[in-house]
Length: 385
Image (cartoon, rainbow, N blue to C red; front, top):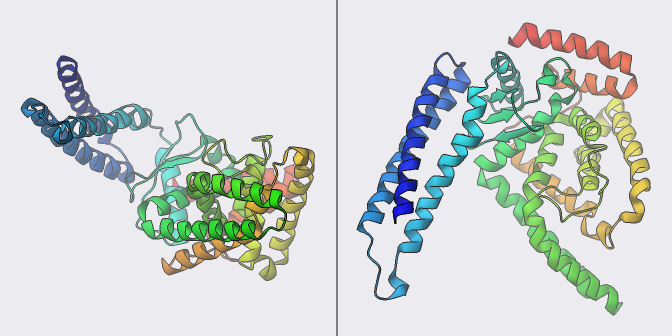
């Protein structure tokens, strides 16, 4: 108990430090960030109460004669939960607030305008340009999500459409409906493939498929959120998102078909999804320019696929067939439309239209893209600084 007592004291000191620093960061912060910091201070206040309750439970604890009735494990689990939450705010979030940039408000305003265009005016994003990773989001404060935004997009906005994938995370974490609908599609797909495997006439083929789908049924749950966010990204961002993702991930990995190494679906799936989703939604039939852009992405990816084709695992194409991806797309379209979100349409206008123009320029020539990037960056600075 001596070590636990020391840990309790340490956590109380950390909470005191967090209160002090969060209040200091809130002074002079822009509106979105100030609101998020206020909510995090409320979280810290609640964690203080939770920690006090745990301390009381430890002080009153007496081991039970019957181990089945001993509450030690439950108390320690609560203790660990509080400690982990404090540690996360201290080591993940606070350094971001302490390293705030003078351009964070500008970036937040741009992201806010994008949220408004897609139908999420109540979401007030907080951008941080000081971070160690690529695009990411912390949606733990749903109406004030914290976006890890590459500072380079302020002068080279070609990656800006990747924000639509991160908006997918905000939706996925704040609304269980999206999660449930996607999970239902996955469950139906697993059942369909079990039935297909059982109908296989060749015993070896049947055994291999049953083994593979049994394994994938467990693994696919972990990659479902990222797959959904790619679908959302394409539906909201259109060809601009598809182009940004294709360019951004083109050399990200030579394991195109691996689906057991991370929470992401195989790189091949992510690249195929872009064109599949947009063609499934009929964008290509409404705009010849969008159709040509999607074709260029498809042709480029097909040539990359051939380089790595020998490394494709057995039954890969059977597992990640178009039917699964199309059914997932249909479910997410239904969800987005039910929520009143504005899916990408050719000629949609606003920032999405500008990003689409930039994406086309990016595939045409460096000079054309540079001209667009300079003009678009200047427009953003004028409108949102």
